[in-house]
Length: 456
Image (cartoon, rainbow, N blue to C red; front, side, top):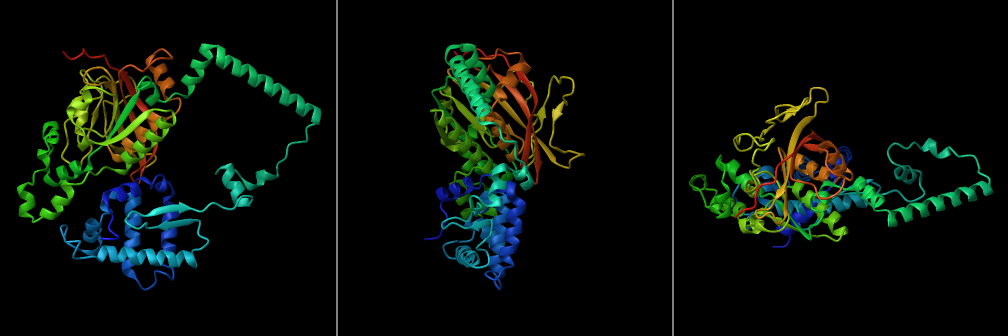
């Protein structure tokens, strides 16, 4: 039926959210203007709908922005209600789209922020209007947030024309020397490469291809619903998808059918995968993205992989235990609670374990991510595990791995050569969150791990 959000449209809409959460204050202020404006006046249902989808996209789980989930959360419908018979969500969404058009056609025409609800999706879209080039606002934006308009009035004294020509000539000579050094001096090239090399590039330097495996949030939801963990074997043979007695007892058959047939992942994994693909394809790498449910154990015998999510959300991580790991996960907590990362041999200044907590000085939530670089099952390729204690921790870990210059700093800490592929290692990253949104990521600890013997 027209107007329904299919899986592809939903995933694309979620991926487009991007950095919208960083503009949360602007978006929420604009949201108040809309729902209190003339276009939405007299329609509490449309006001509530727009507020719900915007706030959920910023703070909640995008998986909740499905028709049935919205119907249950916003309109009091049963979790397994028949959406084919009850079109309240689709009808309200259509009304919201019409009212948004009315708002931006009149009082919101000059708004710097715009909120849209694309057809076929319940995930809002945020756009930011750019001031016309040449305007004072545009000049200020181009200079960045630290630039003051008063600085535009500062002018350097006029330089005599002859001196300017001399300066240009010196610059050209310097550039030529640098170019020759780059071309003919190997150490100059390696030094320049090392300064900008990311950990992803250093880990997979000679990889002809790479697959990014995103987490299975359906598995997470099922584990929380049933209050139990599933093993890798149960995941691989799909026995975790068998309908349990609880579903029949609670008459949730339709809800279970919808949940168990969808391949869901989280926005952090989608953003990480998108950035990885964009960066590596620009460097002519062959990169693809796979959902965890699409994989099987045999695939990991060859090739190169980045596995996003711990064994709770991406069971394939359990294929690569690190013998004698310094930063293993502790015992699995009940579903819904974060795992604890242990530190078996703390160095001075390091804690004995990395636990989610609140920073008493800043009030920000502190979470951690465990990153392991190891071999595939036959030592013919590399595997990078990115396992966060929270969704934002995994997302921020991805940003750290893509950060220019991260590899040289790790090499210095581990006293490794300045060139060549990185050896197997494990690290813990510290992530500061505000309102469940990652704001800062730093290295907390790192260790080398010995290479294991090849499988017979």
